[in-house]
Length: 51
Image 1 (cartoon, rainbow, N blue to C red):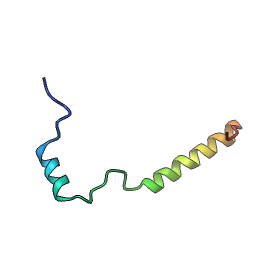
Image 2 (image 1 turned 120 degrees about the vertical axis):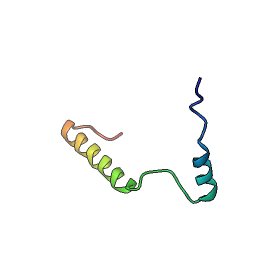
Image 3 (image 1 turned 30 degrees about the vertical axis):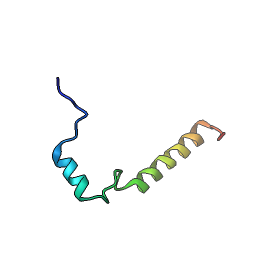
């Protein structure tokens, strides 16, 4: 049986050598903006009220 939760050694080495690495999207701000605009459009189209 394969243990899928085990982290590969090369990933451990990368994390230990580069402590400033943070997870996340490069274009988080743009992605977040698209989501907000989509929600606004849906609310406008379906006449939803914010609670």
